[in-house]
Image 1 (tube, rainbow, N blue to C red):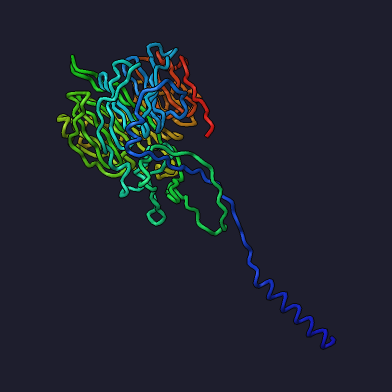
Image 2: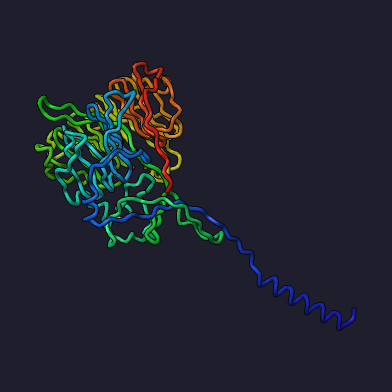
Length: 456
């Protein structure tokens, strides 16, 4: 081979090898995230915005509550719709109470209690056409807007997870005011393929005052406790309610604490004790003079014989999961579900727990489910909201054979149910349904309040 040619060939090959060696494969990926941007109000604006107004469409239903002939539907983060439900086949919209930052409610007599972001407000609803705020307690829910509590400061939005990675946590700018709502937006991000995602296993990253959402957590059933004759009576809420009323006391919960209010004067709730329960507290359910508190790690049973000072009797622990509960004289019915906010990916079940010995609750049987949310029980009829898998109805007379006694399924999205006097009030993503269950094997649809889609 010609020596000059060989030299030129080696030079070209060397340059080519150097050029190729300097090239690295670059993989880029475009990821689309759902984000929620905070909406701020000053504390003065927050209070001034609380008012009654003309009825508005139902857009994003949350907790539901029944009191006498009136049905209350929380519009998540916005306020409360009031319906006259004397005829469940034709509920009539009465009014809307604008309450920024509202997610929970309870009623005693003619007084409605609702959260207004971190404040508690009592309303006189004796005339539903003329609702009046009669008492406001500032900072009743301090954990919601405390820098020390991270995303617990904004737990209200139904898609918001409550866990966060401290290494990536950037707090919202609370100097701008109180967070009362979150605006949903889709955002795209381009990154290298080997760059770890900020969104893993339900953890949340606060960046640029934006919260990235992971999953849903809403509501389900509670039974109103018996009241003494001549005393104002409480209504009926959901099994994932965070407000409940028992023995003329209002109980509210946040991530760690149960707070007690004396309602001897219903229009003037008096703050009382604050009981540290634990971590991951989600729901509260009253039964007689007992309180059953659901958390992501178990069920806590409290004795409220002295309603001003509840004392813990026992704990029934379970794997980390979302945990609504309802109770009868002998058993507690607990649904556990998967999802990023629930910190598990596989656990979907119904647990039946024997509570005849309240100091020593024990598991009777576990039933596999698909994705159970809220539940309710009337007599032997058990209703389980299975999210996209529908509303399932069971005969629970034999607690060891519930799975063998399914009575039917309604093909709707469901996450909350109140069964009362043969009418099941069911709320889901597309609205609120009411069913006649006088024949539990053959539920009959009475009415539907449909959700109105609003462009963002």
